[in-house]
Length: 150
Image (cartoon, rainbow, N blue to C red; front, side, top):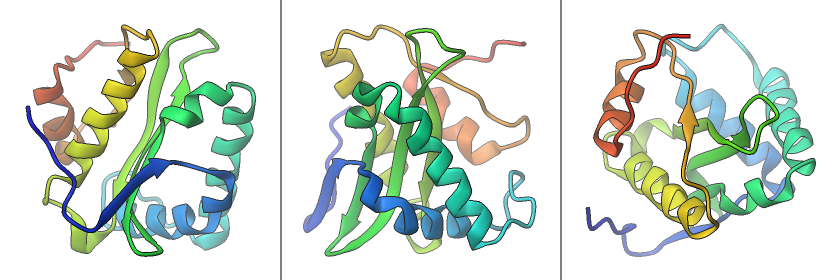
């Protein structure tokens, strides 16, 4: 699929300086979804800091994680981790701000991330999706993902 970011949008690797922006993005993206449990900003910051703590052990993974935005504002992210301490990348989070959902940004971010990982020699990328998270299921199915019972 030939996917392009909208004109004027930046796409770059995630950095630890993105913690607060990613926490705000996370709250907005997950609010009113099956995965939202009433967390506030402080909990979102802890979650994002945890991601960077895990990524610090495997710096190559955060190089392949992607944020998208306009000017100074991050509006979408695809964050990669390692799965169960193996050398298998895992999609930890794919999230878009509410006004930017259903516009192809998550699809663009996921496909860009897959391309980056393939270029780095990874042949597998896993994702864990909450059963009933239909938007995530719709995002991952066309990318070739299939359900595996645990």
